[in-house]
Image (cartoon, rainbow, N blue to C red; front, side):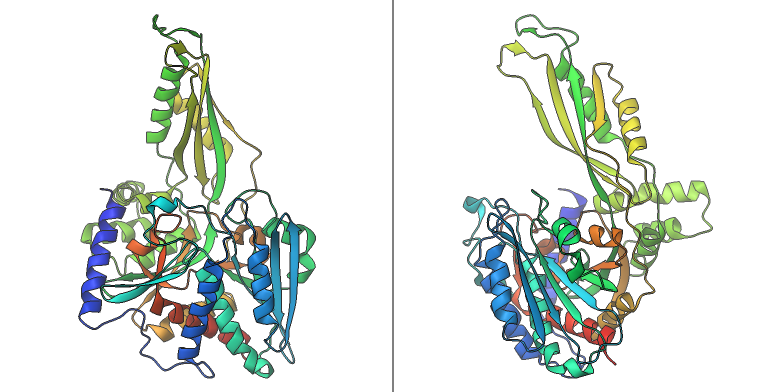
Length: 487
């Protein structure tokens, strides 16, 4: 069992015990913000999420037009909202709505999410994945369904928050743009790329944006931290191609291409790129140290983020943190072996084979240098590692000094005074990168509080969300948008 799996089991047990004793990380004990109806937000978010899960937008083929039409029908009933369903061909679409402030004096804020979801293996689900199903589990009700976390829960909570904010348009000093994209989970570039390339006029005046990508982490029965994404790694594909003589399987050949490929792939798999911290990850470990319980890990976090640490101290601390896969992925560029191809018959030695690595590069790292290192580390004359496509410029990091980041931080502390807010670099990729590249600072948050056990179900079997976490999410988004738009 990996360290991540162990932590998820321990976290789930601690959370279940705490909830059984009467505590709940999903109940906000502080007063509700002005004009916000908690019961209404909970009911509306649940209603929207059930409707969205019931619309099968599995990518491929996507069929996001189904969801765009749903949003169009919902926002048609909200006063002061302009709507745009933007077809992108073959059942695909993006959707934009703009809640107009009565007398805006500042640039808009945008809130966004994606409508498509990853595929499912229905045989491994306990409930129908495209039918929202509420199940009572020990201590809490869960809503099961594909997209409950990624990313229809975010869209549902944002819709509920905007429905309530619309009643206070005369108190807003900014428009609020709602963007729902297609194709975030891959495939043809008909989502955020199409929005930037063909429909940018609808969103280009946003001062900043709020997207998926961060986390609200539950441990020991409480919201332990709110991790706000300010940057993310850049995803690349690197292919290893091995060549050699072909022949009959009855005569073993020393230059067997697949044997060379396996040796090179194993060496690259085991290799670790140099540690390279940036502004976000240094602050991430510094803040995370405040809540880390393991004294060895805590000391390593403090040391790796300390500006005065010597190289020996820094390297020793990084080595300790690297034992945990998630920390290791934050510290350095990482590569995962994802596909191996080769051979046509069991009795034929093939003349070639290939291996594919998914490489997630730090924003301040050089992918060409990484590929050069792969070739050096692979050390097989028959094997060549090459980058698919061209290097891309990493978008700028979204600063922690903007009004939106500060509104997110203040909202988290207002709801859970004991929580820790942490700037966060996502190891995955989101639509936020395209907006940062266009000069729109974009912040990520998955606003539902989740224990690690549930967070790890994202893209996996039996994706689910705690039902009471939906109201928490809507309130967090309402508070954040109200703070950043209030006169």
